[in-house]
Image (cartoon, rainbow, N blue to C red; front, side, top):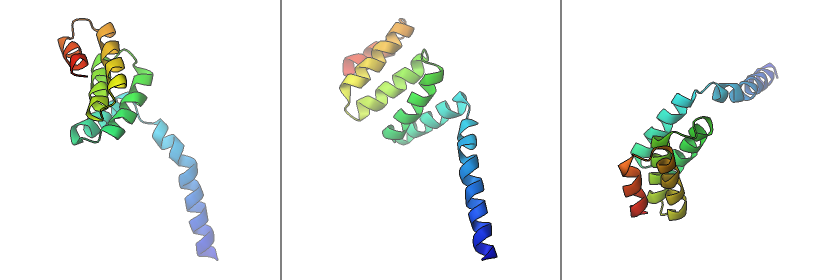
Length: 104
């Protein structure tokens, strides 16, 4: 009985503190994780993390490009074009954004 109670208390402790642990991730941590997923070819998770990062930095054209490339890899051409167009609006001199958009 005492063991069960201790286990229950530990589970509750972790459940209560889990949201705080996620909240402590900085935008830079989120971007790093997004890029890791991207480089591993895990485009679904890359999109999730790029989207989370872009909530803090919506004008980050490299994150927009990389999320667009993730969409492109998944053949979601409409969203890819939207991201590349947003990247171009943010940084008109980024020639690669134009190339990526043409590929989509």
